[in-house]
Length: 194
DNA sequence: GTTCTAGAAC
DNA sequence: GTTCTAGAAC
Image (cartoon, rainbow, N blue to C red; front, side, top):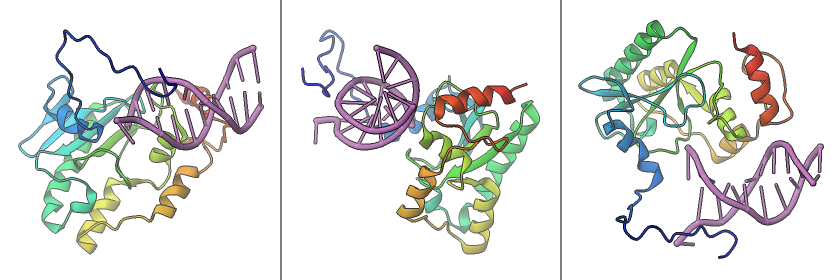
């Protein structure tokens, strides 16, 4: 077997698991009762399958809206419902939570992250994970709502800016500490936990 | 988005 | 020698 090829020979007894493309995974999670936290006529709240903090939810529309870049003024009330669900969770959870969107999402279906500030989680592994939530790559809910109301659409960031944000040196989100690498950052984050 | 792992960094 | 990161995945 060559070094990078995974052995794909499986139990031939089992039916072949036809993997849908990974970017469609949220559509599956939205339908999975085990992952659903809240549900209204237009919105579903699920637990992130790979949480990057102790609390990490996703808020998604039932309607087929791919991303923030498909939003227009007709979606303002939908987004305001996102905000209502955020406020509900703020009251329910004993933690500081932020709500926002990634500037360049990887997964299909519009999704708003609701995530706690601790950033303590086994699924937080890479610099890209970190910078996706702690740089301006993470666009706060309020900013998206404001831009939608003022411009009627959301402007994309350039590939250069995207690249630069991902290359941002590691820095703690709760103090000025600049860790050498991810393991050091993760150790440090534990020191902020009550 | 995750997993895996070669090769860089230490 | 071990830890850590970064790029391929058909």
